[in-house]
Each structure stands twice: as C-alpha cells, then as structure tokens.
Length: 240
Length: 362
Image (cartoon, rainbow over all chains, first blue to last red):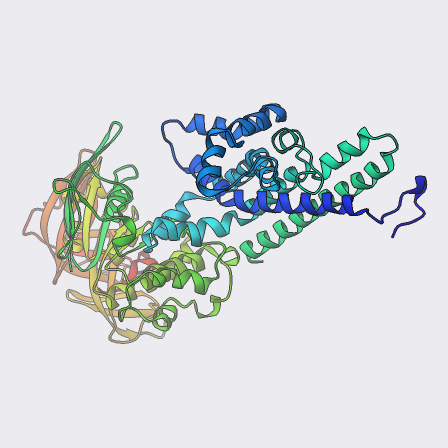
C-alpha cells in the first residue's frame, strides 16, 4: 500500500507477518484484560493496607521488572510447563497446557507487564483521599460499594494508563516469551520474535524493518490512545 | 429519640473519657481545640472504636465494648457533615445528594424536593462540586447527609471553613433544620456564637473530659462556666418578640424584662427571637441611669457573683424570665455592693448586638 518507499519497502504483509502481528495483538489484549482485575486488587491492597509480608508481596510483584527476562521465562517454564508444579496440575485436571501455546505467551506477557500496571494503579489509588471513602461509608455504603462508586471512578484514569502501559509492554515482550513458549510461527511467534527470526536469516532485513515500523506504529497509537482516554476521563471526573 | 454516649479511649498519651446524653434537638460539643470533640463524634460514627464503654441511640446499641458489639459505619444510619464537605468530585450535585439514598432503606424520609428547597440548592443540581463556592458545598453536604434518611446527624464544625458571610448564609438553614426534624443532631463547634444560636443542649469538653453538660441556656448563663467558655465569648441569650419596626431603622423587641431596641432586625412582627448578649457589652447601674445614650435599660436582680483571679468579675442577673451575664471589674462589683439579691439595671448599647447574634428561638 505504501509502495515506492526507499529500499523496496512495501506494506503488503505476507501471511506469516500478518499472523505475527495478529498473534501479538491477541496475546497482549488477553494478557492485559485478564491481569487487570488482579492488578487493581494488588494495587489496592498495597496502597491501603498494612499487613505482615507487605514488603514481600511488593517485591514479588516487582521481581519481573528487575530479573533478566530469560530468568523469568525459565521460572515460568519450571512452574507452568507440563512437568512444572502448577502446569502439571493444570494439564492433569483441567486439560490446560500453557507451554509452547499462545496462552503461555499471554501469561509471560502478563507477568512481565504486571509491575508496570500495578505501579500506575497504585499511584492513582494513593491520590484518592481516604476521607472521601470514609464519607461514603457514613452514608451507608459497604466497603465493596465504596470501592465501586467512589474509589474506582476516581482511579479510572490511572487504571487506563496502567492497562495501556501493560499492553505496550506485552506487545514488546520477548525474552520471557521465547524462553517459555519458544518461537513457533502461527503459534507463539509474536511480533518481536518474528523480527528476531527475520534478522537471523540472510536478506531478512527488509521484512524485519516492515515489522519494526508496525511495532512503532502500534506503540505510538497506544500512547496517543492512553493520553486521549486519560484526558477524557479526567475531564469527566472534574466535571468541567 | 435520644443518644447516650459513655466511653473511654486512649490515643497515645491523650485519653478521652466522656459521658453525656443528647436528646432530640441540637447538642453542641464545645471546648478548646484538642479537647477531643471530633473524636467523640467519630466514635459515635464508628470511625473510631473506643477501648471501653457503650453508645446507644434510642433502643439500638451502636457500640458496646463488653458485649463486643460494634455496628459497622455503613449500618449505623448516620448523616455526617464534615468540616470540609467531602463531596464526591466525580458526581453531580444531584448524584451527591442521592448517594445515601441508594443504601437507605425505603421509607418515607425527607423528600428530595423538600430538602433541596430548604437548603436553597435547586439551581445547583446539575453542577459538579468543583465549581461550587464553599457555602454552596456545605449546603449540599448537609442535604446529602439529610437525604441518607439518618437517625442521627453528626456535624463536625460545618461552618469553620467559611467566612462570616457564608456562615450567616447557612445558619438560618440549620435553625430551620433544628425546628423541622426530631432526630438528635450532634454539633461540634468551638464558636460560642454558633453554639448560642443553635444548641438546645450543650456539652462542654476540656482535655478529653466532659466538664459540664445540660440545657444550653443554663450552661451558657452560669458564671462558673465562663473560664471554660472564654471570657470574651461569654454571654447569655434573651428571648424576645419583634414588636415594631421603627422609622429610624431600629427594631423594637419585647423581652420579658422590658423593651429592647436593636438596629434593624430582618424578621416579621411577632417572630420569637433569641438574642445573644455578650457579657462584656453589659454595663450595670444600681439606679436607673438618666441622660444616657444607651437605649436599652432593663431592670434586673443579681443572682450570682463570680470574682475572677484577675481584675474582673462576672455577674449573673435575672432580667424578667431571662438570665444575663455581665462582665465588670472587681472594683465596680465591690463599689456597687453587688451581691445576690441586689436590684440593679443592665444597660445595653443597641449597636453592640451584632446581626449574627440574633437567631430564631428554638
């Protein structure tokens, strides 16, 4: 579609390239949506409660941020692989296999993106005045209702920012994914894995460059979208 | 319905130990800042869980340390008006007002239109709290608390954050509220002017203890309480009926001891008013003074004399059916031989009574 770009770049993607792009989108959307409720819950607990082991939980959540991604992928493989402790149980009782499947890629992406998501949401929760939540409870709202009607609407911009940050991180996740679920075209070959594969093949540069442009475009789009949604939500909350 | 409060609680090195009764009407909790007033209503609200004691509203036990009862905040059916309003910024005024009704049991409580009309917030319903003035926010907060259909209203210095003009705007609404509802209202305030205008019962606190409680007019007109109230704020209230609006801008009122002339009071003829007279605005004379610019001279009898530690003295007077306080020097008290039973005249300057000290009688 954009024929005539220098270096013979064209934007008619091959079926393989399409598959990589589509798979990446699928993996990232699922990773983001499924981890979002957990992200909000963990952020809420970390922001609002003091309890024994809070620092341990905080450390665990942040671990994927500081560990080499390959190490995270290895731990996932040991835990969620078919012979892993959790993976074995999932396979045996629920028939769910994660290793070397796109669902595994989604799990790896979710784990890697989780700390970023939790940080953004936790900041938003800490900015909500607990006195407002107190006022809601004096008006008859139980804890769950206070959360649903006061806390959640007020942190919505932070939740959206966290979700989009997580989505962008999931789109770019490479190390843990390739370690845990390998690089199988059509199965687990996400956009970054595809770029990596093309770069391993002589003459694959042009294909890699096309995918790189797509990756850049998706990332920019996500960023703009998050800015736009965030501003719209903030406007709605401020009511001006 | 009546609220019975008796509890003890420790916060670090501050200990709170209080017991009082709040009948229907406005019960003011007053005292210096740091005396524990807000902690008391927070305990009643359930935001603080006392170490010991019992809090009961009518037949309902809200808290009983011995029986390990503590009704959760959201089931206590309260209306709590906070000092800073605490309106929900993401909801419109209408949604804020309706918030408590989502959770209140369906029962014929205050109607939305009635509350909105009483508080004069009809024009604000579709706006967001962010765009409201302080006075408007506070009126919405009061409406929100009322519409939750509460069995008890708690107000923590609801006017403290407002300037005098805004206070004057809201006080009449609170007076109307006192007249129209039969639920107990616990009202925390350190302003004697507000307390004198609104309170039917007064609980005076100091250092976490109740030092005096009883009907407001009794507590306020007792010279023994003057140190706790603050000598500049000491004063008692006269009940009077608006008798005439004179052409020169004065309003003539009839108190039980005689006529009173005040700068124009905006009230209809026949209205019963409560006028707070500060002790420091009263001059005493043993004989009826003549050739004096002050218009108000009320015959009175000395009821009690309290000599202070300094050069001052507080004299309690009975003028007709009302009790007054006068703050004079110890020297004058001795020179005039003011002793219980002595007849005298209380002289009040008309212009000494500020508009804000004139309120509807409860």
